[in-house]
Image (cartoon, rainbow, N blue to C red; front, side):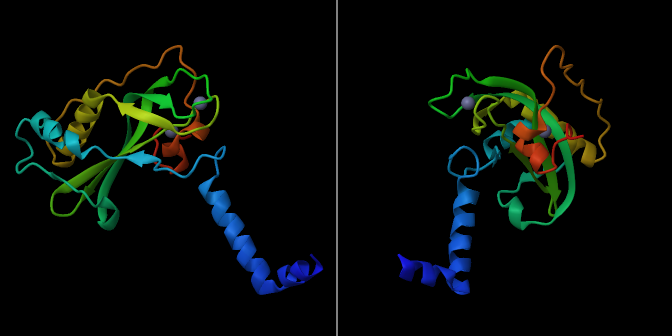
Length: 185
Ligand SMILES: [Zn+2]
Ligand SMILES: [Zn+2]
């Protein structure tokens, strides 16, 4: 034991142990849940977005499948609607609906775009929820933004009034954490 302590006390070894501990902490930050993607993209809805553009702008923008590697030339933080189910089998939460799911729509060069949707955490246990977005709200919001960027005159969409609902909790919203949520104050 004393020998181990002696080895541990060596600075290089101590630093290595610290680094390992930090790595462990990072991966199991929230209630022991392994690290997961806190965002999702929906390239499968691109076709519907293009249909909602009604032929303007032309040519229609393409979905950028590798947005992380592209240079963003414009972006917009907004909200869509959807539902979440808690992934924690021990949690009693029945899941939750949200009219304020953060989405960042990004425009790149070569007439491409993507839209990053941010997940939310369970109020009861802090686990990351499984996200089911409302397709129509996604399509409408993304098409609106692409038209606006192209200079097409568009009516401002009506924002859903959130009445009688608990306020948006930034600590449970991955969009707020990434500073990409319009609800972040
Ligand atoms: Zn839960
Ligand atoms: Zn938020």
